[in-house]
Amino acid sequence: MPQITLTPAQRKVHRAEAHHLDPVVHIGGDGLSAAVKKETDAALKSHGLIKIRVLNDDRVARDTMLQTLADELDAAPIQHIGKLLVLWRPMPEKEKAVDEDRKPGPRDVKVLKFSKRGGQRPEVKMVRVLGNQRLTPGGQVKRAKVLKKSVKKSAQSQ
Image (cartoon, rainbow, N blue to C red; front, side, top):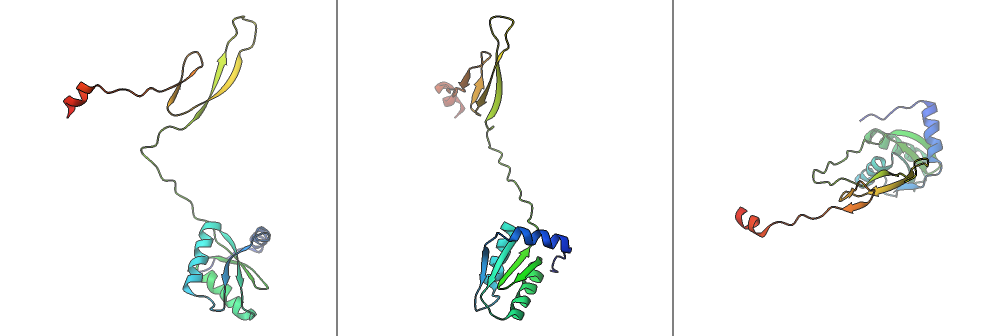
């Protein structure tokens, strides 16, 4: 996969965002192993912008590591300063799982309580109604009752 190319202005923005980040991947003396590439890919998926610390003293080796990671993981090399490498890749869209058995969630309802005297403003109260509750015409919150099943009907259906 080719690496992502960015304009200098985009690179500058990502460098500024990465300033306060801590390294999430450390590359030891073994260099770029399959495990390091896998962890870097997982970090890019979850964070998008990451710092990598390389424990190697050779600058040329660190530079080739940055280019190799950017090429193989389809990322953009942002910065190489000292022993720190910064990579960026756009985060994938997260899909929401749809649960068919999900019950309705809580909702906030505005209850107006009118005064017995006509000239006053109604009292406004916000009430949270849960999925198993209902609101009566008087503004009271009632729990839904569990319907009892008839013993005779349940015996007939079997």
